[in-house]
Image (cartoon, rainbow, N blue to C red):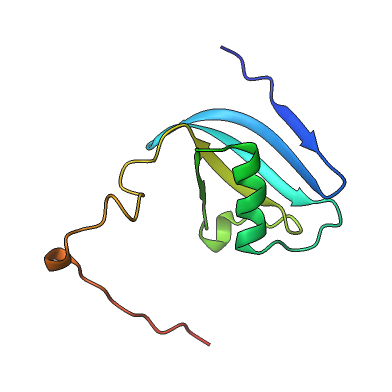
Length: 109
């Protein structure tokens, strides 16, 4: 099967489905989203665009190490999955209270 990609645009947002690829979580669609005015998007705004286009789907946004960072002027890169990636559902896959280990870390200045 060949992935031909998809491009969706409105007066506010531009969304490009770049490809489908295998991952350790299952097959994902790589999607790039940005505002047409190139302004930054907060979590809620990005989630609303994602959820309108992919209702009922899961997405993961990665934060790579600095040497692999792809920082393209407020473009957001998501991997969209048909099913919940195993181990990432924080409500369903959370350890039982007795197994929970939390550690706060100080953010370097």
